[in-house]
Amino acid sequence: MRNMKKLTDMQIDVLGEIGNIGSGNAATALSELLGHPINIDVPEVIIMDYDNVMEMLGGPEEIISAVLEELSGDLNGIMLFIQEKDFVETVLSSLMQKPIDDFSEMDEMDKSAIVEVGNILMASYMNAVGDMTGLHVDNGVPSHTVNMAGAILTVPLISVAETYDYVVLIRANFLVEDNSVSSNIFMVLDMDSLNKMLDQLGVGMD
Image (cartoon, rainbow, N blue to C red):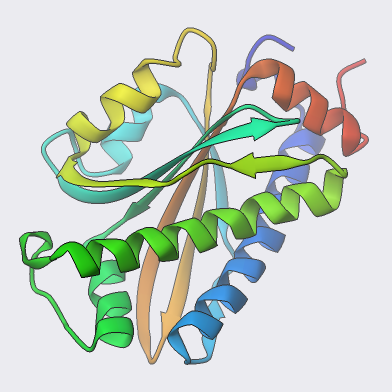
């Protein structure tokens, strides 16, 4: 298989199931971290071209918060956790008792908390992959930044565009104390890793 556009409906459904299980794991982990019951809508799994990612985030000048991790082991690629302001506000209000009105108000402790949340949520998705495939995946050391979407996405995504032909977006809405907050996680695997994962799930290419 050369690129994501050739995935069958069954293969896309399997990726969707990983999104479902991973989101359930993420909701449980977030609930334990925040000390509040967390409900979650049925997540949406979208196969995207690179050109559509920026538009989905509101354009290249939209200010966003992001946590990036490299994946290694049996699967190679990157995960990028994009947090919109409502997610950051809710998490920091619960964890740090410090509501914020703008990303610029985040100090180093706030950023560390967001990194830890991002690390936990992304690990939840990769644990779902490992449980379903039997593959071992290592999540790298997370890094965090607040910047314009164009600046954040250019380095991790464009730098691998020649190798990785697609982006898998797992979008979920968490209900935290009556507040609905959105979570956007991008998973980008190289094509060998994607084929390996689909083979292990029983829906590989003939």
